[in-house]
Length: 143
Image 1 (cartoon, one colour):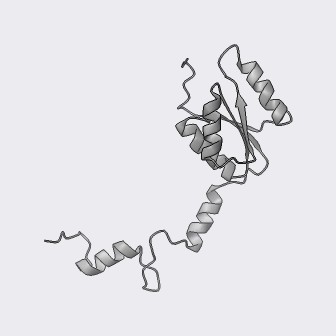
Image 2 (cartoon, rainbow, N blue to C red):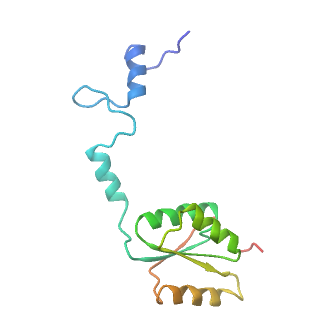
């Protein structure tokens, strides 16, 4: 027994349309995920070029931070991430394919270590920092 849709199209045409994607102006179906001129221009408008900018992602080795760091790297930014745990920095580098523009700093941003971590990062970027991303998944109070 087949389920009926609320679509006015007969089931077979509705199913075929759902499998193939949206209907084009010329009457043919566009495949799902197919790029069109409008989707390409929308994507280009949404991703500003960060080529050469230096961005520090606070908490960049965590789940949320690594996604942010990866997107910034794809946009052309030099990305700084820090962690107290060298293994997490190495895992991030490995997951992202050891990108040239990822600056991994072993150090903490907790009181007592933040100044030293900042100094290390600034030495590696020529005292340059354009953006800081501090997302809500960072746990400042964690030990």
